[in-house]
Image (spheres, rainbow, N blue to C red):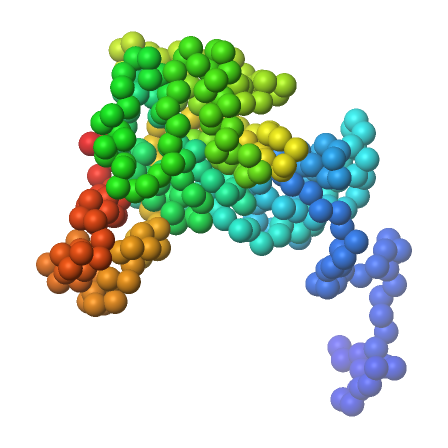
Amino acid sequence: MRRYGKHTDEDDIRSRPNRKGNRPRTHIRPKHEDAAEGMVLTVDRGRLTCLVDGRIVMAMKARELGRKAAVVGDRVALVGDLSGKKDTLARIVRIEERASVLRRTADDDDPYERVVVANADQLAIVTALADPEPRPRLIDRCLVAAYDGGLEPLLVMTKSDLAPPDKLLELYGALDIPYVVTSREELADGGAAERVREQLDGRITAFVGHSGVGKTTLVNALVPEDRRRTTGHVNAVTGRGRHTTTSALALPLDAAGGWVIDTPGVRSFGLAHIDPSRVIHAFPDLEPGTEGCPRACSHDEPDCALDAWVAEGHADPARLYSLRRLLATRERTEGD
């Protein structure tokens, strides 16, 4: 039955009263201009530990953020109870733009990328020289992820008392990556920690490495007042270590604003999300030579202009070899 005439106006429409007494829903969300700024220190089952004005505040993600997740290192805006008292909970209403992002996928066929750390300045790639043996392909993959995400790499070699670092230094020398060599004795007396600390002061550094390489032991030496879980052992049969860190955690390093982010040990580092065209940006001596390359050049084909660029003396041939090795790392497994 028609309730209104053919020509109705607003006065003819009757609104149904709101029995609950609350305001009608709207798509207009508050801007939260008075929200406090904070940094995500760790994430655990939907609860995020944040640092806000020197206080540790527990928070949860606001529903309006949808599927967008905050990760360790993110700069966020929070509202609600920011006192940091027990059993209080704030709400993250905004995730600020990220300056850098370290991403990985489970494998090279997995389309789902996982953001490991946000806003880090540096990626410390920790590898043991023995027990377990170094895995150059895994190091290469971490380097590609660092270059793609805007992080500067740092190579930290542990257990030099078991094997010399010469082979690895020769392999990565052309990349001009800063490095630190440590031994177990030096970690015990604090000398190695001080040498590593010199590379970290005033910066946010994410630590990544294969299980069992001594990454968490090193982090414990750098930040002794915030020691992480006890270190694990390396299986004598498989050569694999046991995970002792199960979630990423940001720890303050110094008064100059330095931070150490310890991440879980990895056994693979998928690069399905990487755009190979961005890796060349980490080679400023080679990048100008790509102007003569054919469209969509892989930089490892007969018509690549980089061969002529290097032959003319503009760059070291070892640098071109390193670039091509990194670009080809997606086609190989870490154990190759």
